[in-house]
Every structure is written in C-alpha cells, then in structure tokens.
Image (cartoon, rainbow, N blue to C red; front, side):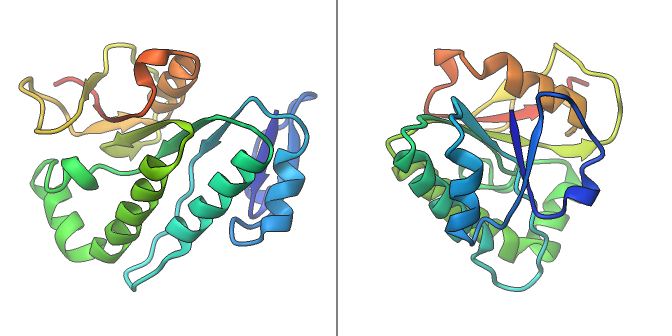
Amino acid sequence: MTAFVRDPQKLQLSHEHLNIVQGDILDTASLDAALSEGCDAAISALGVFSRKPSTELSVGTANIIKALNKYSIKRFVVISSLGVHDSRGQGNFAARIWQRFVIPKMLEDKERQEQAIRDSDLDWTVFRPCRLIDEPTSRQDLVEWSGPPPSVRVTWRISIASLADRILDTLDDPAYSKQAVNLSDPA
C-alpha cells in the first residue's frame, strides 16, 4: 500500500506494508513515483482550503487521472464535499452558510474536479460526506443518497472513521461504480 502525501511528518501512521511517497499532485513525476509500483486502486482524500479562486484540486485530479490511465489503474475513489453538483445547497443551516459565504471558490474547483472524474473512463466513485468529525467510532448505518436531500432525518455529520470504513467496504462493490454518494450519520 502506498500513501502519497505532501508532508510525511503529518502522517502519524506506520505499518510494515505502508510505503510513504512524498509528492505534489501538480508534479506528474511524483505521481508517477507513487503509482508505478503496481497499485490496484487509488483513493483521493485531497484537502485544499482556499477562499480565493484556485484550480489545485481540478488540475491535480486531472494529473491523477492521467497517471492512473498511464499505469492502467481503473478504480478511483474520491472524497469530495457536500455542496457539490447535485448536492449543492444541502446540509443544515450552518453548512449552507459555510458553502455560500466561506468556501464558494473551493466548491467551484470541486465542481471542476468532479466533472473531470465523470468525464474519465475510470471506474470511479465520489463520496460527499457531510461535516467530518474526528471521532473514533465507525457506524455501519450511514444514510446514503444522491440528488435531492434524503427523506429521512440525518445529523449532517459523519466521523472520519465511518467514511474510511465505507470507502474500504465499497472499494470492490460494482454498485458504487460511476456513482456520487452523499453520506451522513442518521439522526
């Protein structure tokens, strides 16, 4: 398993089977170094916070897609954000305010990022979690939806552990192929 990170010091994880590659998604040579070792799938958890216009996510994701194609890696799972594409304007009141006034430029780049993913011929899945919370508990009863908000009550939050487990549980599930899935804990 390979972890491709900007700053290895921030990755507080080690394992005998974990290879850590330092790089930048805007540097195709570092992407090649990470993906040329025989990967079966790629999971992208890119996080770029900017209140100014940026193309780092969309350009970086386009670079990842090119590298995945170069090495014939078809499975690509991406963590995006609630508020993108058909989830625009969803969330509780605070989330909608945050989307509209604090991170609109970031969401614009996430729109371009997701469009590049949808336009690819990869076997992709986009997960759009609600507000991520750092809680060690992982829930299996997550609410999933695409399109309009769910008809059931949700908390509009999800633990990082729950998101990670859902990604790993669905990595080989064909039902998630070419799907964008919004996620929240149930209320």
